[in-house]
Image (tube, rainbow, N blue to C red; front, top):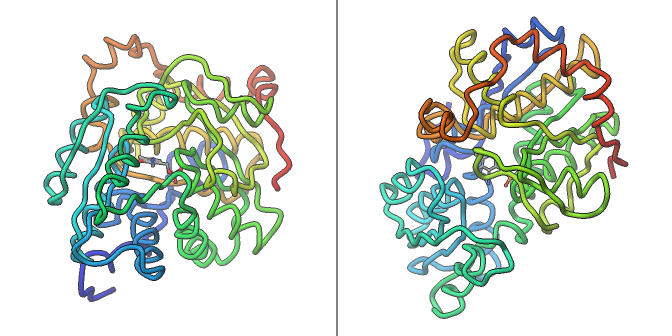
Length: 350
Ligand code: PMP
């Protein structure tokens, strides 16, 4: 139990929660690192804090200045509350197709919000370039740059990874994670593999993202699209470059919708959309490994951040996503099929 002097001190030291239902079904212990316990409600609070701390230490960022960041939302929320704790302002640049729940939280945390039309990265109006440009135009603004700023992965190397290791007394067999910037999978995989090189790291990628194809062929190509937010990317960024991945799999939205409903019904956990994909990946990895393993993944945020999409039947109908597997045994049988096994990409783990 802590007594914090400001909110930023509450970031980190999150619990692990065993998902009983899926642990029973797979014969493995499937653990969720409860990142929704961070004060901003997501795993990105950790990256926000480390990026700000390191920039202050380097003398780039001082109280009274404005932090600028291009974000799908959660990094903006994290930076907004860290900015308050450090006496700074925050400006979040967000594509306008993300869940409105996150826009609202950014503003409630006292940050300014600039929304832009979603567009490919090559377009100068992409939220990444717009954030960079605003920061360049103002002397008292500092661009966090979560994709290339490796303080992001460092947050996980210094904190999340060691927490997992201690919580399970070193008994970690498999780590499963999706990637947005790659900070989570890079920092955690580096730390855990330093403790035990046999820890197996799985990347789970949504449709619409190019990471799975990149690991398979060396090229960023994608197919389809996903209702998930904050994960998936079409270019190699510095944080992901540090990820030590052994296996990769791509899973469709129908699977994460099925998993979210199952876990909600059986365990009472209302997962966010990236977390539901993480859990689907954890089930997949557990079924490949066989019983008796400790599998860890992340509840990056809660379903409140996806209420208007993942838990909105009209939205799912509009996207043609209501036909998800209603029976978990069907999903598990597919996950054990040869067709799925053949889709696993085997990577070097380096
Ligand atoms: N899940 C959610 C809900 C997120 O907002 C993000 C961050 N964009 C991620 C997962 C991915 O984390 P990372 O940037 O560390 O890869």
